[in-house]
Structures are given as structure tokens and as C-alpha cells.
Image (cartoon, rainbow, N blue to C red):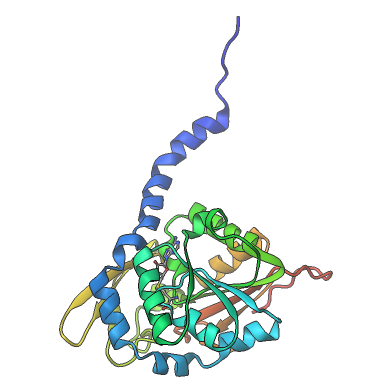
Length: 281
Ligand code: SAM
């Protein structure tokens, strides 16, 4: 008699599907979180010159140091980094999962004298929509925090890895959530690019969800949900998806006390070194 024996891992997958589906839906929220009004206000109030000054030429320098020319900005948003990189002479493709963001980025590009090459692409299916190989992928402005399941984070990083040339580099930044989770929020920890006009504070903090409130001078308020990424966790994921060497900067500095920086920047390289992997701080 022919008996169908259920595959054990199928049963497992069915059991695991529900929570993952829920988290995957949370990862989709970025499409609706950035409503027009919020994005318009943000763009109107954040002084791009001041933001540019506060980050200096850090990203440009790190990219040039590695001989990168062709850059994929996977979290274009309203175009701040894409436009800076174009100004600095890089060839840039500007991707984002949100068509509204890309439209705004395109308009901002025109104002700065550039025609942005935009592609609507969700990170989790990046290689379906973005073709060709890049010297560098940048995922900036605390964007990676929008993924709520580990499966989504691994898939996105694997897609970033795949779109890079054999010796490509990923630059990904994140807010210092360790400090918020372990020590509570300090007023010093405001978005380094918020400037004086926008007050950003976490309203709710737990291990798998932070809810930030953004207050504008006209009294309007907006909220964004984010996944609080711990520094070591992100570094482990980078290593596990295949990046060979990486370095994490704190507020653009190589040395820092872990609780001090507002932001961490991870620079992860694909290049395979013959020496055994060394975790650099
Ligand atoms: N890099 C820009 C900056 O620093 O001004 C924008 C940052 S904004 C905080 C995050 C951006 O990531 C949004 O434009 C959002 O649409 C995009 N995003 C979030 N999750 C995404 C995903 N899964 N796939 C593609 N884009 C995503």
C-alpha cells in the first residue's frame, strides 16, 4: 500500500508560518507609514545643507577609498544621499519600495540639476527588479529598521549581497537602539539630521518594537514603528549572509563608547581575505 508520509519540515513550516506572516506584514508597513503629509513636512523642514554638514563627506570618502563608482541607493527616500552621491560624481541608481518616495526624490533631483535613475524595488526581491552589478550598496537613514522579521532581514541582506560585484561594499546605518533599550532614551539621542525643527522621541520601547513620535513646530505629530536592531545582532547577520570583513563606526568615528553614539554605520565588504575572519570593532 502506498502511504504518503508527511515531510517533518513541512509540518514545521506550517507551524512557523503564522508568526512569520504577521511580521512580514509589519515589514510591509513602510509603504503606508510615510504618508505624503509627513514626507512633505520632513522635506520642507530638514535643512539638507545642515544634514550634509553633520555627516560631512564620510560616505563619499569611504566609497572612494574602495574605488567604488557604481552605487545602488536601496533606501532612496526623498533622495538626500542619491543626490549627494551624484554631486560627488558617482553613478547612482536610486531604488525604494515606495513609489511616492521615488516621485519626491525625482523632483528633488531635478531641483538639484540631476535626472535620477529610479527603480521601485522592495529589498526582499531586489534582484528581480534591479539588474546589473554594483560596486556599493547604501542603505542609509535608519532604513533597515523597517524590517520586522529575521527572515526578511536575512533575505534583504542576501539580496544586497547578490547585487554587489565580487569585491563590493555595503554601507548600512542604524540608530543606536542598544542605548535606548538598555539605558532609556536620552535627549541627546535625537536624529543627527533632524536639526532644530523636528523633535523625535521614542514613545514606546520594547525588545521587538519601538514607536517614535515626530513633532513639528506647527504642533503636528506623526508616528513611525521601527524594529530596534541591536548592533551585535546586525553584525552577526552581516557575517552570516557572507560579508567577510566589516567595521562599525559610531557617529562616523572609529573609536567610541558603545552607549554614546546616536547612530552606528556598518561598512561590510564582500572581498575574501586569505586570513581568517577577524571581527573588527
Ligand atoms: N535614505 C533616506 C534618507 O536618509 O533620507 C530615506 C530613509 S527613510 C527612513 C526609509 C526608506 O526606506 C523609505 O523611503 C522607505 O520607503 C524605504 N523602505 C523601507 N522598507 C523598505 C523595503 N522593504 N524595501 C524597499 N524600501 C524600503
